Image 1 (cartoon, rainbow, N blue to C red):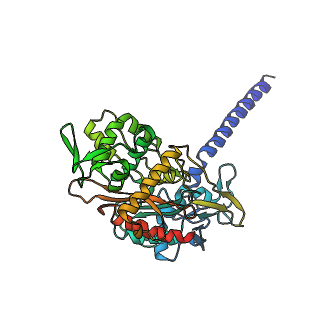
Image 2: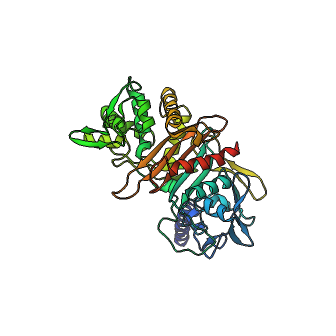
Image 3: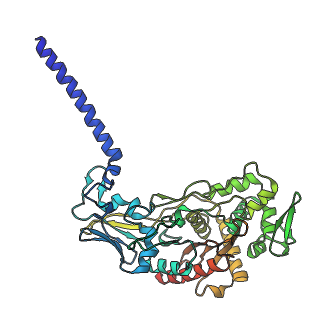
Length: 450
């Protein structure tokens, strides 16, 4: 009897221990299974540390960007397609962390937390992107030897048509690891915005000041604040907001920012996505940054016209352009159009999604008109044939003696070709130069999709 009791106790303890172990295994498998599966030693989907057992990645027109052939992962045979889309699709060794091949490896291989790697034998799932290889190629060629980023999206649907980062490289060749080649500058970088930040200051003014459109400030090659000079390229004299935006007057926007106050400008910058991370298809971008706490008045003036310590991420800015074009409420960008199994069964697709109302429709429409006037009166409509561009340039000062970054941001206001864009070319000088040219060439290619 005593022996039976001991056996029963042992069996009970064994059952409890087994149950605890089974629960722990299930829990760890569910929480860490993706990491275990994606470990390069997993021969089901990796070969010599390179992911191979995965489906196709294609552009919006069905052009192959990455595929698996005879157990080897390969890229497009076209050189410019490979290098211009590389940061979007990612490399197969996972150095480009934000690329689809790394960030969505589970989708490509068919991995599922509940069922495991259920489609390994069939080669995984196919991912179709909204990106156009042709538009990406045009953008990269337009950037030339400049480092930087180009982004274009449909501000009505959210489809990314172009996402280019430079420098890039040919993944089929052996390379020396130059600094920055693995970084997707569109997602993972931030830059001083220069005069493009004047749009943020203008939004804050239009939202909070009753006389924002008629309020004037004087510019005499700049303005003086508490004995310190904030410089401007020209003597603009007395100007309204519309005129100051078109002429990109530093003195005007500095004085406007000071009158708005640090708290108000900070509030609207935060509302527009500063100090928080934008994302696309679950891939987080670097956050735009601005901190106006305990700021001197003269520094607030510099911040209001885009210098100070302001830093902007290109994806975040693209969303703001979409909000201005779309009556104050942006469509969120995405680049995965659909996911299908190897048998052609659609198992996932993206849909249009919106941000909250970032600012009023009235403000959006007023700013849209001002940006349209800026192009027609200053940059010239002839520089953008077949388009009705609303835009703002930026010449972002960096360290002393170093050529500024060149910015051009905006959108085409025609609903039949709803393109918003962001271009930043590092150390390329005035925004009206290189960045504007890159934007036009890219948009001319993108408009052919409509």
